[in-house]
Structures are given as C-alpha cells and as structure tokens.
Image 1 (cartoon, rainbow, N blue to C red):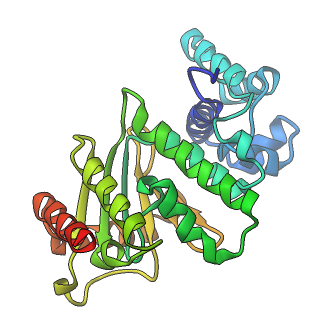
Image 2 (image 1 turned 30 degrees about the vertical axis):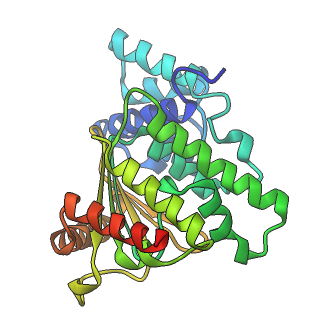
Length: 285
C-alpha cells in the first residue's frame, strides 16, 4: 500500500525550504556546501529534490542556516524521514529515466496543469488502445510497449482518481482530434474519453480549430505546472524530455504568453466538446 505522502513531495518540501533558508542566510551554494563539508553537487541535488536527505545531514544544514524554531525543525525532520522510499512510479524504473522521474515528482505536487498538444491527444487523457496504437511505430518490444502504456494508465488513475484533483487545462489542436490513430474504432473510443473528461469540473478541454490560422505556437507540445509555494514549471516534451523551472523565467514567460495566445484563439469549452462530438459522429457514420 503506497504511503499517504509520496516521498517526492517530501523531497520537494525540503528543496524549497532549504533553498530559501540558505538564501535568507546570505550563502551561495558553494559557501553552504563548504560549511557542511559536502561537495557542491550534493547540495545541488538536495535543492533540486532529486535525492532524499538524512536527518543527520538535515541537522547539519539547519545549524549552518540558523534554523532553530522548534516547529520548523520538527516539520523539516519529518519531511527528511518521509523523503526516503519509492515513489509511485518507482516500479516503472525500466521505462522512466531520471529526468522524467523528476518531472513526475513535480507533477504530483502541482495544483494546476496547463498543456498544449498540436498533433496527438496528450498522454494524460489517452485510452489504452490509443496509447498502444500511438506507440506501435516506435519499434518497442511488446513487453516494453506494455510497460510504457501501463505507466500512462497509472499516471492517469492517480491524477484523476483521487478525491483531491489538480485543475487541468488541455488545449488540443484540431489535428489531434481528427488524426485517426489506431483506426476508426480506437479513435472513436478516444474521442468519447475526451468528452467524458471534458464533463468533469476539474478538467477543461479546448480545441484550437483549423480556422484559427497562423498562431503563436511552438515546435511541439509543452506543459506548464502551477504551485502555491513555488515558481511555475515548464516542461518541454521533446524526444528525450527537457525541463526548466524558475531558473529561466524569461523562457517560462514566453511559454505562458504562448498558452495565453493559443487559448484566446481556441474554441470555448462547449464549442470544443461539440467539435469533438462531431468528429466522433463522423467516425461512427
């Protein structure tokens, strides 16, 4: 049975609180690392949330940063103890690279998700058969393909199956709605799933129609994650995946503007769902 709080969330709490404490103490990463006799790379890994933190290491940092408030100390030590152990995707280590695992940790902690997909239905919303058909041309072994699809289904279940949901906005190009992945039956099932998701209060689906013409777009899909306690995060979905957060605010701002521009040109929610319904009727017919 999985832990109530995923270890990645505790690592994220430590990342944010320790980074802020270091900055409040007026120390650079190099200076802080030297004072606790760490390598700078170790401190960087702690501040990016990619590794767990032992209580003894945490106490050394708190001493350097001057953290003495008992409530804060207790909160951080609890997070350190909870930062160990497997995250929900750990069983998929054979198909999840470290970069994508880091992204999944951020996604798990996000309160909002906004994404644009110009070609296909995003993995968050895919049916199993659609995902299988989409991945088939990549030449994966049957076992590996099944594992990747299982990961997508597990992610979808966790994202939309719990009582507490994040608010999700999906902007799809009409090409993603019209492209017949897997044939008519598979695509019709996928479109019905889009309609089902679109009826949920925590999910908004918008379609950018062909009639929108030229628009401020990108060469591929992207995801913007929102948090209540940290900078928004941008995830660029290339072949290998690329992620950036608060360290490149200008790039983040450009993609936020891109999403705003695309959203203004997209159909409204009801019009978008009607377009998806028409596309499904065309398949059924």
